[in-house]
Length: 241
Image (spheres, rainbow, N blue to C red):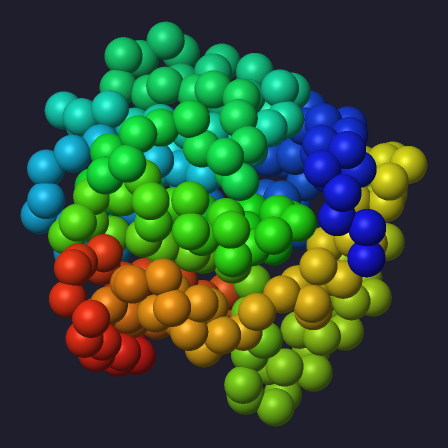
């Protein structure tokens, strides 16, 4: 599958103006709840003071889900079209800062953020391990690194229905709405099928020094949140909720 930076930037730039609407329609609005739940979970489990970073932020849906807080909330994406929309949605609120940048070379110093998260974006990066390594680098010791993305439900009936919708109907509906020459909504199921399972993501994070790793499936396992802490200890305690 072609995940060259040029293709990904062009593809998402072309659908940026309808990205939020199409996602809401194709998920029946549940995508909004996934991000709200993620922000709430990460903030509830994080007492460390510091800023928040949303990597591959797109139009800023997860960034804005963290709410207007007494800390800086940054969103970064390498699609200028996406960032332009995110900035409009933030309406100039001083808590939010959006910028164009590369997830493989984050323009931030080491140990900057208390929370570093990515939602539905890591699988679009040509080198996910390097992307995760950059997220860990800019996270404070004691801070949280998190990944939210699609996963495969385990219940047989749900799995079959989901598989049919996700791989057959969703691409057709998405392309009808988006009319994108790079076939963004055919790329979506292909990228998900080739992406890591939650347990593989947990292993990647472990290799990068993240501990206390937890996973939380949402909506019968359609998506899964994987997160853990960056600390100096070499120990690891992985749990599932």
